[in-house]
Length: 133
Image (tube, rainbow, N blue to C red):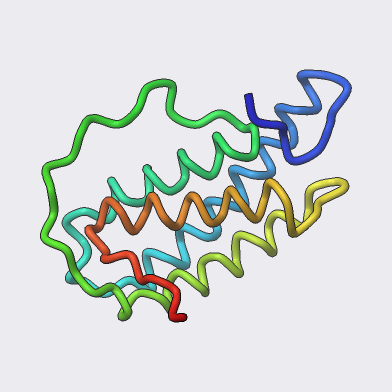
């Protein structure tokens, strides 16, 4: 079980924190949808669901109870044209998360964001860029 973003003494406070997370996610998704090229529209909803689910599981706010159904393999594509959209949406998400009491822009939140972006790109069929040596 993953640790939540912050330790909370009661389930009702945990639900409140997760509600704030949901609002922050919604802001990021609005920005992402507006900035994404039309060529990604066919799989955008599934990619967003995968990214959000991965992020929420990592930070301790749930996510999908069961894994999403397997997706047919997608043709690999260079997704350099969506990096700006992802960066802008990530910035909006981080702004929303600052409303959390005791929020830290590192640790489990940072890992959750990385995992969410990876899941998002995987559904879209983005080639994983390897770090240059």
